[in-house]
Length: 73
Image (cartoon, rainbow, N blue to C red; front, side, top):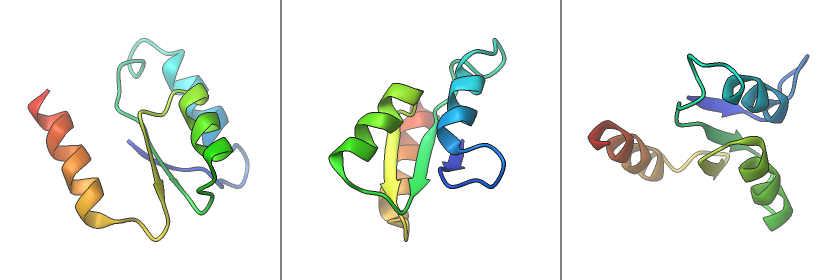
């Protein structure tokens, strides 16, 4: 799942935590899409349960590589 961090009612960090807490989505590959690219932002994304962190505008080659990796697994 590609999740935008800057959502209006619930931020992406909160959404990731909720998804990790549900049996149906706890094993999903979560990819953070954000305008924030500092190391502290990457750490916060990892702590929330994101497996990957991409800064906008998204590098489509990097996204494809991640998705291919997930598809192989």
